[in-house]
Length: 186
Image (cartoon, rainbow, N blue to C red; front, side):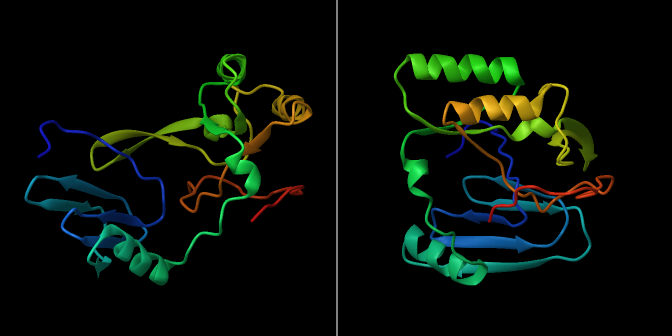
């Protein structure tokens, strides 16, 4: 039983969950959804007039995931380097990233890669009366990361990898690929 309200944010194009009652629910549409979970109910609020959903039934969570990924696709195995240490997800700018990275390395913790998702800046968006902090995803470095290209080169010189991901939920004011793109990884 959930005794207090806990907020989680899912930043993927598909809203999906698995219940302890051995079913999965996928909501397919291009709008915002909000799930509320209680001990005997699930409430789904949708900011759109059209929606499509799917249920996946199984005898255990693994079966449900197999059904779900059979429908939407299965992820490729992670590269070997991803298993060589922790993946540090840090937000807050160059100084904070360097500080946390140095503390981690000084503690003899192997670091496989850094995930710096806020390098492109943040914005505030109001949806269903709630103010949400969102990343811009404009593929331009933010003031929190001055000299971004030099920072990346310094990390690469230390054999440090940097990861990000392509977000399919781009803001309508973003101009994408107005210039030449040097690196694209799939």
